Image 1 (spheres, rainbow, N blue to C red):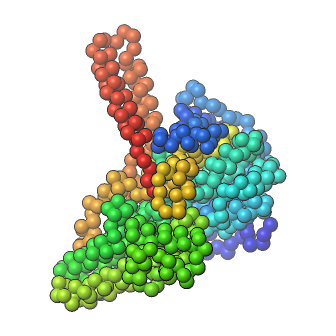
Image 2: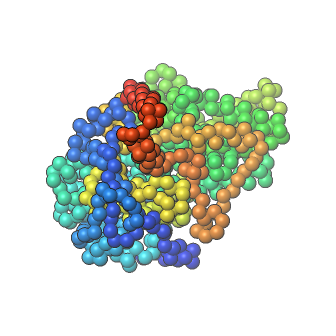
Length: 617
């Protein structure tokens, strides 16, 4: 065992109190009997990619959905599992740390031990590197004691390395076989769960006994689909950042002379920026999805902010707060194209010093226009997935400088007669990553850990643990599992060097839905946010009292309970069958036929139209 891992933490009084908190289990996970109801085969949400995905995952695509049932559930065809042999389960943190990750391991161990005290949970040290090198630590009560309801991934450590090459996949399989693992649980986001699906498929093909289970844990909140309502860590990140933003809002209102430009974590999707805006009510938030949909240029965005500054000045307000997602730079068409040229030259081995001289004329003109500090940051080597090093690119400083230049120009021209524009820039990124998790994330992660054992007990491979109806109290949560391959999509067109991934199935990041209720709520309030300074401070994380049981606003306003709606539909169909049967009146039969004909025709049209659509980046 590496001495840095699994050592007891020195806990503060708050941490000690947290460590005593016991999350609640939904009724379907209580007891020592596992009851599983299998649904229909889960297919890809985008039917156009179904053939490609089924071809790439012949052993794990098209498996049924699984629902875990409470003891009192009256489901005649449910599978009841009461025998629980000794199992050996491995668990690994993949990807960036996300608050609540330790509770997945706690819940998993509690479930394993509750069903058979002789079973073992083995943690891999240092993420996927530890998995390949077989560096392990047995997870015991003593190891877990100071990590329950605490932040970070430091109990086991993590890595963002991918398990993708044939050598890595075979290395992971060799480790699982050498350690005689019945299951491998992978904790991570979209990339890690894509890798989990590939491992599950390869293990199944090779008849390796180890089952692979994925858990949706990522602070960006971008692993969202019909089965996954939100991810572990997202609530915490948004609450911690919202408090920081609110503090800045209060400072801006008090000083009345500064505009704060705050860049948020979020990479390609702006979920964190949207949620934080709904919680703290800053004056403006610029979402990457809006910019990309409207094809706004850097000059368009600058003008938007300048017009807002001018409108506020007319109300004698010379302060404000602007939120910017870190992925914004890749959402602005001309900056994205410039980055692709730069990354292409990197790929050809051109040194950083020589890249600027080899850009195309239009790219060179844009590059020279940008401030020197941004040029240097744009030249950084791309990440392993071809994206820019977004955390290193200070988009907030770029926008602040462009706005200042434009406001000075307007002042000279006489079109702006207000006070001088002053900007202060912040990046709220790493301050929240190691945060103590919110009560919701503690509960959610712990329950997901228990679900992982239920998946293993049911003998399922290539599934992700899911919990739905999350906006309700925990005793109403629905627990189940969905094949990871059914969450995949296939990109059919792309831009730049990343085009090498076209046609390869993957769990892709879900972006903010510009037709969704959360975005609609933001738009409906954007004018009052801009002008009225209705700043809101949700306060620090609470485990008891006011605010302790609050959940993400974007989760609560959306109707995301997919499994609940499936159940509701089944109930309606059963009612139709019970009413329309031999002996019913002609009028009832006619009404039923007419309604069903209309419904099936509508659904057929919707299905065929979705098949014909492309899936852009």
